Image (cartoon, rainbow, N blue to C red; front, side):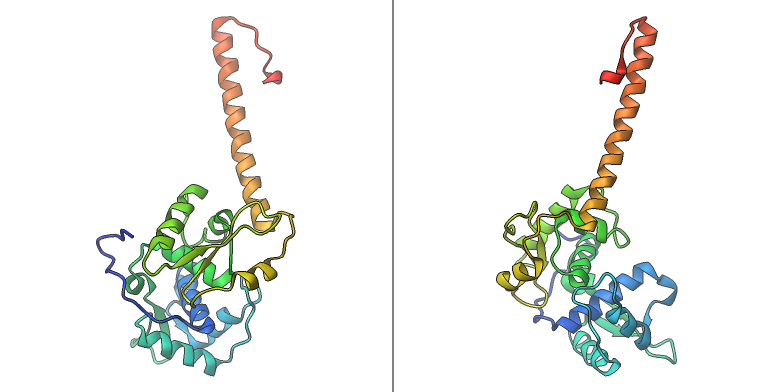
Length: 232
């Protein structure tokens, strides 16, 4: 992997517990989505870890369990406690410790929060952390993460009936392909996030066609050529 010059080289770390991964991801997420309340208090961090939306699996961790996870992250330098407030507040250090660019941090965070996802789903779900230009740009960073030694992510085998392969992070250790396949199911229906992504792409294509049609009509008018653009 070729991180930015200001991003230190990666340090090997142990696998995170599931709760440590959730705490770390919530710290990254809230830094982007609610910067006015970041670094996070223990109460805000606990609420973020236990929220019911945009989380898989949904958790019900206590503040004591969150503090234990924070202590584990501190020992890995992945989390720090701020010293400028009387109320303890916590912040993350994922980019520097893992030695990856911000785009990769966004993808890893989204995988930690939501579980296995396709590149299209990751582009949509990580939009508030980083605006990827297209799905192919997401795939470039996923491939780099997968090529790291040891790898950060793995591309899962395509499920029966699935249209695209999903990706999963490896920050909490190796994943069980069988368990993930069972949770993911074999439904051939399009997920809500994929549907929204397809709608956005269809809208973009429709706008391009409309602009091209207007251009053809203008050029035809200038040349004195009658063109039926309804058939285009």
